[in-house]
Length: 231
Length: 358
Image (cartoon, rainbow over all chains, first blue to last red; front, side, top):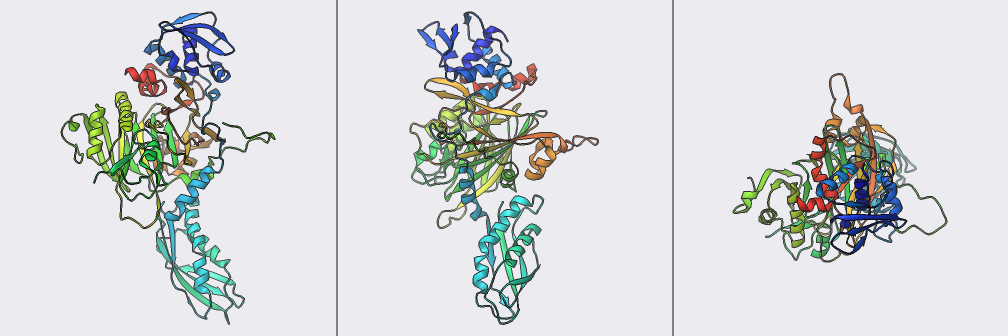
């Protein structure tokens, strides 16, 4: 790249606005590239952050020497920008500005905003009234308390089961056995209408960890779950 | 009833993920240009934005997949996305972002413990009269909860009129924003949200749309309308995944105190190990990968082509002064005259002076 374009590139990396008119490049100092407009008083191109802009030019441009008049035309500006777009500069050295001034980067922000706001509206599970063969005092209450975890199963499937059906809508019946301790000893599903396998597995696993009020004897419970959700 | 158009991340109406809190009209406009129907109503603002860019440098085709999240959208609103070439618009049935975030986390690595302080840092509805002469509706279709129009315009005033007539009300700020892109010969994808039955209480909803368009380098419409008043500071986050065989750096021009500089507007969150188009396609859906998701020939499988996935985050609450983002290759990339000519519009996004004279 010619010294002419090199200076122009430096100018644009440091401050595009000052390049809008013909420039006369003066000596470069530690403070950056000094320019003078032909029709105005001298203009010092804002050098900050000079180290970054100098570094950005390093791979492809040699250091300029001596003052040069820079008649800045649109075609010349395009050549400099074209060099940028063609990977001619070390753009990783350009200054970064990904937050408001003075505000530190918040690593947890995305998760807080996305996971709180979106999930509840995109998945729901309705739990029908359970029918135990032996009465269990809190069967419906415990199943209702599992709804949130069932919803998480739908969301988890949306994340994990990449080849699963796109719709989370469907229903299934779960039959499980609660022993005399109130613990679930077995569970199976039937009548599945469109619920992805990954969701079924998650729901069954969740249910098997539930604890109910102990029935007088082992009780077989059947309950139907209806899933709805959007991805 | 007069609807309102909002623009989300792209100047006038641009959008992306939008969002949420109930805000005053000035706040909403400041978020990028949502458009609404009644001035007195609240409108969604942009709070969370997730975008996947899949770019194929061979076909020069970009898949721009954006998830819109909006809350309290009881009334119609809309947004406009400018693109350097004519886009096609499609609904993405399955949002890829949760899976992407899991496989390619966009969070940056923990900073090293230094003990010091944290760094600071023609089918147009209602179109008629003069507008018809200079605004062309290239397509119109229902995309989820939105009606999507693909527009070409040669006159900003006519485009404003068309938007107004089609229930996407503009503002003086959005007019200037529109004019910028009309001068550059950009196309527009205008999305009008068709509200369903209002629900009681706040609700949020997400939809994912895909725009496919030609561009020699990955492009992100980042510019927003200049508003007279700075918006209230709401948390806001943009997450971008770039999948391409070519590693790139996001670069944008920004005007600060009368000087325009090139800067990196986003923080690269992680350096993920090289992967393949097949792996990424399994996560986001091969249909969202463009040519990178299709077998190249009977003897080759493009799905296994080497691919880089880069993740970026932007937490600025305002994009005032910023131009659009071009993802520039990290290494020199051969550009012949024809390719340079195709980059003309992108050049103008990185040098406002070039854009001013076009």
